[in-house]
Image (cartoon, rainbow, N blue to C red; front, side, top):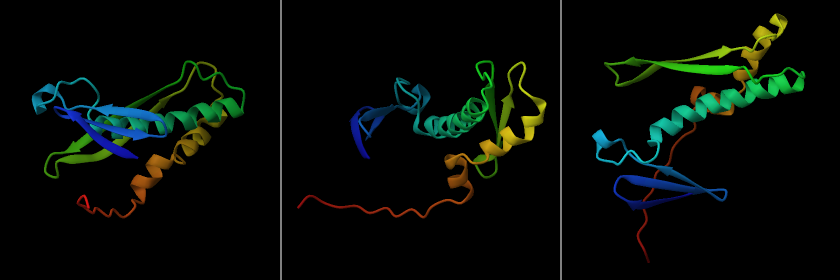
Length: 130
């Protein structure tokens, strides 16, 4: 992954042939032309969970077109961060009740969620041109 700075408060990441654009909100000095990096972080949790819900239904030939996931966060004001992220899977009409706990268990396999529960170490270095 390569990160570039195209101007203003924009920061783009090039990864696997895609350019993932970010920008800061207007009140933070950006133009609000793209999601902020933290917004993408939250979206990665929700969409990773979503792929597990979708795959769960597909493996069982269950139409998941009416399903949604609603994600909400609770902020710990003292710590200045979220202390709870809640994922509410709203199952589609006709979803078999016998699979309720199993679909929840499938979401717990989300790689993004697992990385948050057991975070990697970070190493940050700076280099100069030779």
